[in-house]
Amino acid sequence: MTSPATLTIRPLGATVPVASGQSLLEAALAAGVSLPRSCRNGTCRACRCQMLSGAVRYRIDWPGLSPDERDAGDILPCVALPEREAMHIVIEAPLAQRLPLPPST
Image (cartoon, helix red, strand yellow):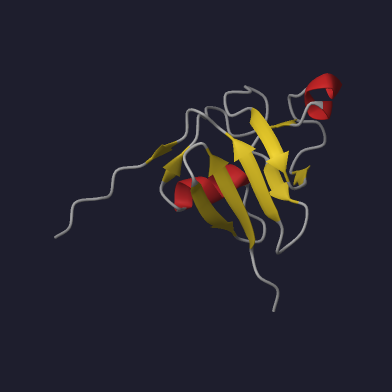
């Protein structure tokens, strides 16, 4: 069985697993990390950030990035999927925040 991909979010320093079929944004939220977001379909660009390493493919044919932005390493985590399992992706997302833990009962 292949390991899941992982996502490291800088400068926060969080590393989270990315399940098969899960977008980078979904993986971050599931692990308690909030990234800027709005539409979640690749058009509003609120989640746009810089990919420092790794490779992604997209759920949609052409996300809201210009060719120059893509060439510069910009991605849209809301529709970005790891290119393959066991891949490690690193993004620069200065506005990322850890979500508060729910109160214990």
